[in-house]
Length: 500
Image (tube, rainbow, N blue to C red):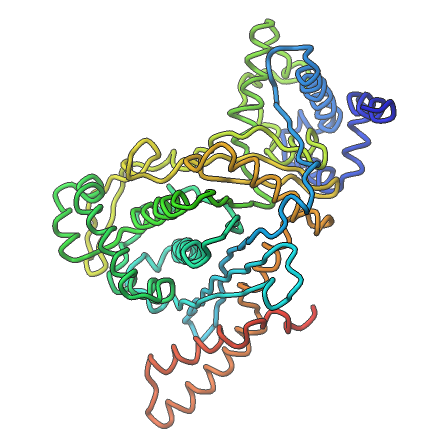
C-alpha cells in the first residue's frame, strides 16, 4: 500500500473520516436522517455521533483482523477490483426479469405478465450476433388455480414464469456462462404458503411458452407428478395425496421447489458449470448484520466483559443482543455495510435463511370451499425435495450507491459466489451512478409493461367491448386476444416509450 493510500485509510479510521464519508454519500446520509426521526426520542439527539463512533470501532476491528493484529474476525472483506473485461471475453451471459402490468376495465383489473431475457456475448463486434432478446406473455386471468384474492398471487405466477424462462435459456444455450436474475435468486418462501394449487391446465399454459417441444413439456410434468406422488404430497397433505395426484394438481411451493432443483440439475450437466445468480438492489434485509456481523461483535464483548458497550454509547439499558440493537436503531445490512465497504469490496458470504417460516397451515383446492390441513416443512432446505440452500454476499459498486446483494446456489460450488460477484461488479461499473448490472437494467426495461402501453390498450379494449356489446359478439377469447397484442407489439417496444 502506498503512503498516500495508507494515510487515507488511517483517516477513515477516525471520527472525522467516518463523518466525512457519511456526508459525502447521500444515500447513507439520507437513511441515517430518516432513522434519526423514527428511533426512540432518547436516541435522536446523538444518533449521528453515536453511529459514527460505532462505525469507527467496526472499521478498526476489521482493519486489525486484515493486518493480522487480531485473530477473531468481525468482518472478512475481499476485493474484486482487479477483474478486467479481458477476463470475461467471449462469455455468453443472459439476464432474466419479469414485468407486470394492469389494465383497468370497469371494476376488473386483468394483470399482464411478461418475462424478458437479454442475452449478450461479451466482446462480440457483430451487433446481430452480440445481443438477443426474448420474452413470452401470460395473462393471469387464464390461470384457474392460485388464490387470486391474495395480493401476492401475481408474485407466485411471476416467480414461476421467471424460473421457466431461466430453464429455457439454460437448455437452449449450451455455451452459457452466466445466468443472472433481477431480484433474489429465491424469495422468502413462507410468505407464499397456502395458495390454492395450480391445475394441470395452468401448468400446460406455462410450459406452452417455455418448452416448445411438447415431449419435453410432458416429461417435466411427469417428473414432477412422480416425485409429488412418492415424496412431496404424502408429507404436505397426509391422507389426501392420492386424491391430489388423481386430480393432477400442482401446489405452487412444491412446483417452484421442483423447478429450482431442475435448474440446478441442468446446470450440473455442463462443464464448466454456468454461474447462476440473483442480484438485489435496495434490499431491506438485516440478516447479515444480525446473524454474522453483530453476533461476532457481541461475542467479543462478552469475552472482554464489556456487555454494556452499546448501552454506554447510546445511553440505553436494553441493547443486549443483535436483534434488539437493530430493532432500536433501525440499521440494515446495506446501511452498515455501506459504511464499511469501499467500492470494489465485498463481504464474506453467508447462508441466507429463506425458509424459516415454512410450517403448518391450511390449503383449499380450486373447486372446494373448505380448507384442509397442510404441512410445508418438507420443503425446507434440510430435505431432499426441498428448496435449495442459498449463499449471499454484499458488494459495494460506487461511493454514490448502496451495496447490492448477490445470491447463488450453494450446491453449485464455492466458486459461484466469487465469480458471480466479480461479474456483478464489472457489469454494474458500466452504470456507476446507478450501481446495478447494466444487463439487468436493460432487461428490466424490456420486460416492463409500461403505463402508456396499458393505458393505450385499456382504451382499445373498452372500444372493442362497447362495439361488440352493441353487436352481441363479445366473448372472453376475443378480449384475451386483444390483451395479448398489448404485450407483443415490437421486439424493442421499450425503446419507444415516451419521455417523462
